[in-house]
Image (tube, rainbow, N blue to C red; front, side, top):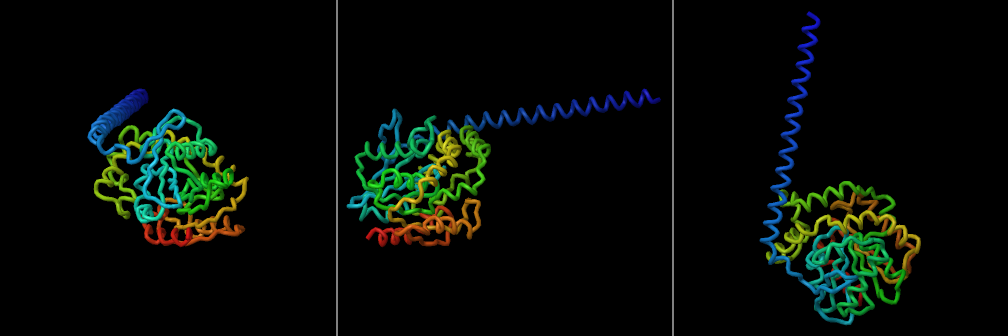
Length: 328
């Protein structure tokens, strides 16, 4: 009797394992089929979007690769807009703001490698390399300094380093909720999640969630319908690129380099958000860090804005007025 019970139990366990294996196999097959469908769909959609992906600016050769530089307007001051980390289309992301300034100033938007219409490259993302590429791109595009740097978020590090290393090239810094080194002392950065975003983009999985492509620039800015379609097309090609992932890996080291050199003594105006929009900080802490950073500066001020992190997509009119006042 006990033997029969044991045999029944063993049979039941084998059957359960067999069922579990079959279920697992079905799940794996479904995942593989989903990925194949996503990749094929991504290629078909990308082909249809080809006309939307014509560069909006000039492509200049930097270290054997193409880098995108957009210019607009004329004036005796040159404003260089520098995008935040992971911003897929810097040219369009800043457009709501710089279109209000190009009647008085020369505008330049440099799209780093891995962003916008620039090439995706497998190169070091240390801050010296990134700054060297930006300076070379401006030189190749015939845009001479000194510059008023307008960095958003992550590019704040590059702007500060630029002013530290080449102070004669930087007339002033206008921070668009820009990063300062202390943020990265407290920021928890997940490389695995960044890589997951990279694979989701490469495999076309992001196309199954259209809301991901609806950036703040699209929802709250002044882009035309065609520009919104261009932005969406660029999003599917330049989200969490390999170059962006490498940039994230290097960001804490880059922040430490900038931190060690102290605050550069160039005029600064910082526009500071309320910390919402994915910063991971409370409103109070987000605002206190840049204010502490410039507290010992002789010619630095700030303006607090009650809006999320991409301030230039929400408060472009107020920021444009603030920039004019600051420069004049």
